[in-house]
Image (cartoon, rainbow, N blue to C red; front, side):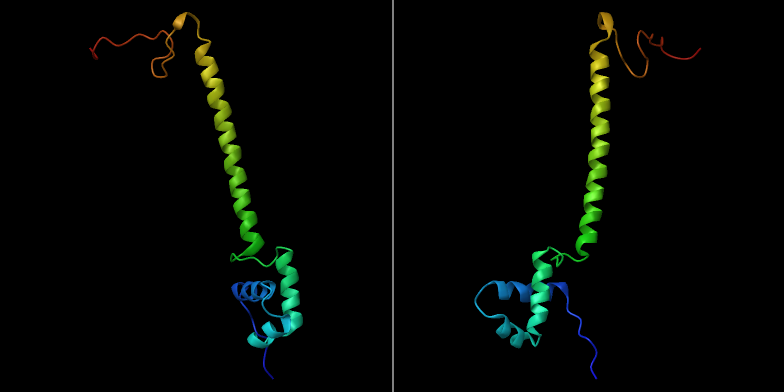
Length: 115
């Protein structure tokens, strides 16, 4: 007795799209690919629910990518907030004081070297 056949996601999508194209009946598509018509109906249901994905990994891959993008948006939002605060602080400095990072406000420059 033969074991169960395994079909790739790409094949399932191809069969369902061919049937949904409306050019042939489910029975004729089933005969062409030697598949039970009820199997095509099950694949069609999963396809319409979005559970039969074109991409390998399906929902898991999509959720991983969404989580990665959400982390990136959060990090960029924090950086943006920090930059806005720094810009506002620089504008508020009294009397046009220098706000150099290395020497600090009102710092003196060296006279040319160590003695």
